[in-house]
Structures are given as C-alpha cells and as structure tokens.
Image (cartoon, rainbow, N blue to C red; front, side):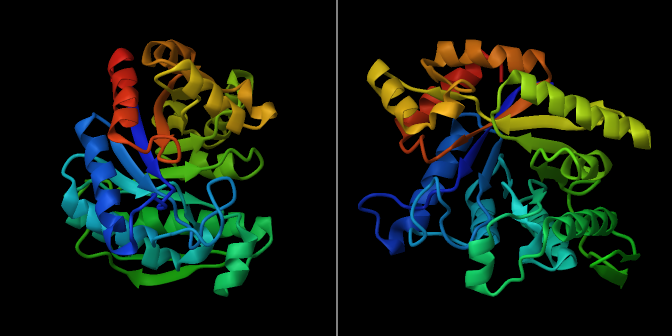
Length: 313
C-alpha cells in the first residue's frame, strides 16, 4: 500500500489571530496540507483544550461543524476526527452526521471513533462518564450501528446501551461501503478486539517498534478468532518523527518531549525522518499523522511534504 500522511489539527490557538479570523487560518492550514500531498485532514473531537496541547481555556471548535465547512474549502483530502469520543453523541445521530459529511464532501469522510477518556470534560459539559467497560460496550454498539446504517437499507439493532428500530440512512453515503472506520486506541483487552470486528483502520501513538509489533500480533489474533483477514485493517499511527530544519529546532523539540517518550521519536531533516520511517513501513504501517502543534507554518509543513515525497507517498 502506498504510504500517506495525515495532517491533524488539535490546536486552534494562533498568535495574533482574532476569533473572527480563526477559521480562515484553519482553512489555510488544511489547504496547504492538501497542496503538499497529505491525504487526510483530521480535527480533535474535544469541547475544550486538553493537557499536553494547551490550557483548557484555549480555543476549541466543535469538530463536525469544522469538518463540514472544510468539505467546501478542500477537494481531495479525506476528512474526519482523530477520534470522536463515543460518549458525546447518540450513535445513530453520529452515523447520520458522518454520512452527511460524506455527501457534502463528495465521498471524503472517515468515521474515527474511540471510547473517550477525558472525565473532566464530561463533567464540565454535563455528560455522564461511564466506567471503562461500559464505554467499550458503547463503542461496540456505535460501530455496529454505523456499519448497519452505512449500507443504506432499513436496519434494526439492540445492544447493551443503544438501539435503533427500522432506521434508514438516506441519502446513503457516497462511498459504496460507507466511510472507512478508524478505531483509535491500542487497548489490548477490548479496543483491539472491537477493531478486529469493525475497523478499516487502526490508529496508535508512537511507542517503539517492539510494542507496536506486539499490538499487531494481538490484533491479528482477534482477527483469526472471527475469521477475518487482518490484512483488511490498515495500521496507522501518530508520526514517530519530527521534521525540522535545523539542529537547534531538533534540540528544542526533543526538550519538550518527556524523557520516557524520546526513544520512540526521531527528529531531524526530511531525509533523516524518511530513513527513520522505513522500519515502520517495512512492518506494514502505511499512514502517519502530523500535528499542527508542531507544524504551524507553510514552511514547516513543506518539510513534512518533502519527507512524504522521499518515502514515495
């Protein structure tokens, strides 16, 4: 499979950009990514900013409103969340929302979904934050409902926490089998088991090749249990590289990374990063996402585009 890059936008805080110009800046980044050869643009599905990116009172736009608007501002990139929390929306309504995104984008939507994790955010916005087992059951329900609705036929389902009765999704998605489903997270007890059932794509964080190979083995085992070919599931991940122009930028980037995570990352020139990605490509990973917390300017994004060219994307 040809390697591809995704551009992820978790950060809506730009120096000297007032609120009435904020979305214009988002559009500029998405269009730049498209021009540079990125295949996917994603946004974060949160309601206020999360730790590790910025303080809670930093700007945060609602995900699907942004994606719908970006559908009219772009023409080639796939669009989705990385990833939606299953607790934030009724699952049938979510499938309808993603179907609508697929229609207005001309068949470019993906459904990114995970079990959700931000308890403080749930409490602030009045959502119930269930125990992890219930969230996993809800994830299973939501993906079963989405798969059924994307077929475009009358569909009923009853699970532990969600049900639909003779539902119809019209108009049906533009993509013949519906938007591809990306399951976010690498939990080995439930998340990967659920991914084996429903996912077209998985997405994991950088954690070193040994850990990634282990998760691949776990996913393969779950696929074998249900008779599914694991090759049907595309493995993607947050980029384990940071593309920088100078040694000073490399050192500054690594200084911001917790020491325990540095061994899983390479920072350097486009060629150095292309070389560092090769073992992941050899191991079967095909998609890598790069975030706008690091790549803030067209020039820095162009360095990532050069890396993509070097690996043959």
